Image (tube, rainbow, N blue to C red; front, side, top):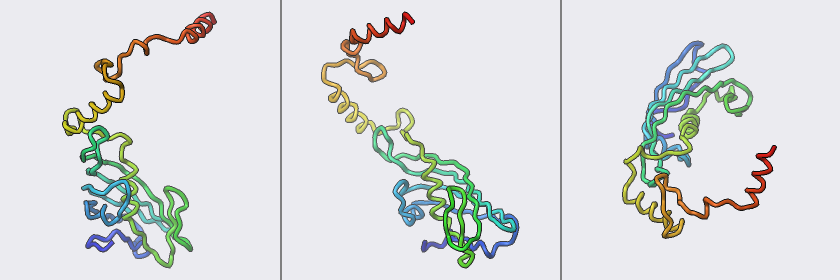
Length: 187
């Protein structure tokens, strides 16, 4: 990756036992990985490699924050990330990924580049919904969004405290449904 900090681990050179590696995943790291989900962040990654006679168990512990856009106001925000993931690595003829937790590394090559795995573990732990804590959204953007939503709902409709349109037509039910409810209630 062209940095002082190398993410390539020469597995064939490791002795049986436990080995520790620490990395800082900063803006430069995310820029170099060039993944679609995360472009900025500041995380500490601790990687423990437990080598046995025939395999390697890699444990990734990631803690820190990444920058994502708030779903409410579309401004950049810090999203905390804290996770632990595991990866089993074995030597084989060709480098392949058998499944999400098993990677086969070519015996001839004998090394693994952790950079993409580190990135993927961060990306996998981004919550589906990310919003600023209450009151921290960009007020100007948030108000413009609320104005746009009220125009979409129709001018003149009242909003209750939850922000839903309070429309009399919505409260009335279709008489056909009432007839079906009577049938259901009789059974």
